[in-house]
Length: 82
Length: 140
Image (tube, rainbow over all chains, first blue to last red; front, side, top):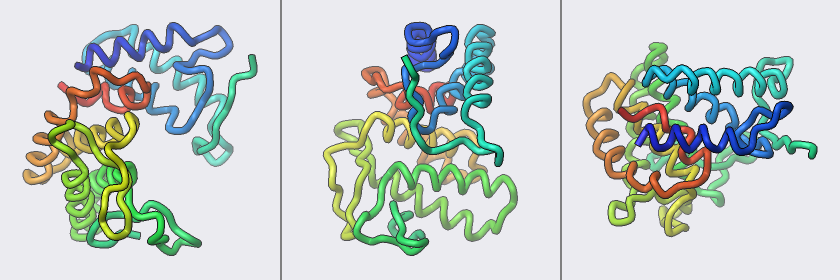
């Protein structure tokens, strides 16, 4: 089951990610970091380096974009400008 | 913010708002928090009590026939939905995974393990990335 869900997340990322929007969906809702977290944990647990790398890439991008000066993620939405 | 049923969903200026009742989403979060606070050694008695309350809520929220969790409960303890969202199922599984993998207490490990196994199969039909995302890491 973990493999199935991980593959789905990887596919979701690949189908919606753009060079300037390396993310799983076309908008950021809430609890976003959990998606990156799932890939990071799954990649580490199964030794799948590409999965781990994708998770870290997504988390770095999200952190740059969304973490406030207080070091917290926001609870609001963030739509991609197309 | 928590009574013998569970943590309240919403508050008015920090005071529980009974009209909004309880939800599985928030009780799952409370269970996760209680495990983490336990790891930090915070007030063990209060932390374990919180874990018991939230675990009982999760157990009651699970509909075995459907393999799904209810989410919203009224203040008079009636379920308000047929079953919760995909995100809710994922969030409950996240909490259960914490119970199995990180709770030091045998009773929470056993309860969480039993529920986890029964609540996992429906994820195969899920499409919400959070519903699957929160938990992909936890099962072995």
